[in-house]
Length: 80
Image (cartoon, rainbow, N blue to C red):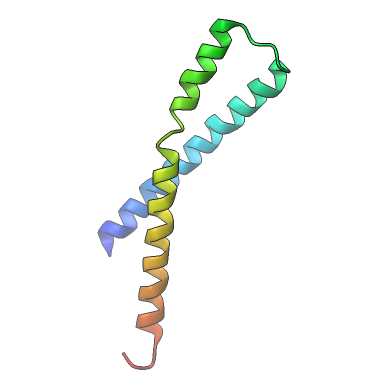
């Protein structure tokens, strides 16, 4: 249970830090309004690649959350 808690906490911190990156990228893209220099485009592309692990982290976080809910349901059931 402790390992699950630590991993869930770590994943949540990662997601929060990626939220900041996503907001800054969104602001830069909105400000560019369709016109980016090659250098700016490459910088954005490089920053976007930092978001690639986010999908797998979110999937693991959701799986861990389901596990916790199942444990909670099992522990709280009158059959225990």
